[in-house]
Figure (cartoon, rainbow over the protein chains, first blue to last red):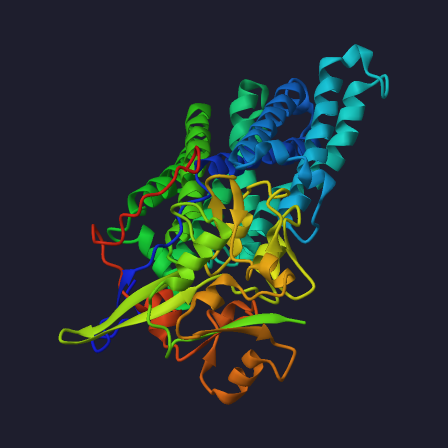
Length: 307
Length: 211
């Protein structure tokens, strides 16, 4: 934090009662992580329907239930992170539409509502109110839910972009990272859920999505890590927390290895060896590592003094 | 009308009278501040001096806190003040993340966001903000930026070194400084010593939960 400090001035802050630092902690990490899995599973289910619909049988119900549960985990942690959680209804009765938080809350609510309908369809197949063919209705609805999953995935990047004080979070990068987090965790989740129900072709397909998502996300993080400091003084200081002996350097690299590097290697190994177990290990690591990666990136900009 | 603030740092002597007046007027809880004075020591002994910078909400024309607030708890009022409705605030801390000046905090008693409002309640009764009244050297100049005859407009016209904090953020602050250097305005221009010193172990009230 001495980038502009000259020996001649030797300026030292001797009194600054700065306000408390980390406001968005691990509750928000849980929020982003659970949402990535929730919407990611929808993306993967839709891809599976288009690519190999015969593999869908037996996967619709568990996949939609897991997605629904993860979306509810996301909503729960969103609510729990509020300092006035009992006023959550204000978002719906006093909405402010320039806020990505408002737009996201509305879209996520509609999304979870539609998922609830899909869960009900699959559980009450024989008593489905919409049509006699629950599976056909499910597949039709899946298209619209997949469309909605795109902005639901992206809106958190919008919130980060609106956080003007946090220079590290840039909108184009964060939106790409949000989508990649969804494809990474979604493909990992469907590999684990599908198990032997997935054909070898589908397993290879989702393995490729997992590996490529990890690769692209890792490349973006490394680009930020190496080049970010060259454009902005604030980014340079923030990245200091994950470089050298920085407070979050160890956690950052653990996240990069567990979420991206090891899954990439394991996906490659599973493709050469044809081992489903190695692919599952890659999937587990990717899901666990994503939490760590998200948490580090969430916290470090909040450590920067603003005054 | 567009109310604004100017601090002449040539005059400020760091007495913290403004800080105390603000605390008392607005009943600001322990460990939080709507207005605070930052001290930065410059130079090497014996050639040293201490600089003082009062920091408060900048009441930006393009306020990130207003934009991100999901329930319009943060809003503009007719005289240009960025005000806050604590009854509406849901405590999401979006404004805390958005304000590039670190001017917003979560009130540990109400669990809602709070900040300087230029003493909007006093303005409504045709009184000056408490910090302006308390300043013994009239370093705080407050008035209508749209009135060329107001004290603040005249001050801005007659000084060449009028600056704002972090102009690159595009927030267009309505809070100005005269006589400021990078050490005053740029948080990255000064060292912050690690470990214990007289001022960095401030008692904080718990905010509850998960930080």
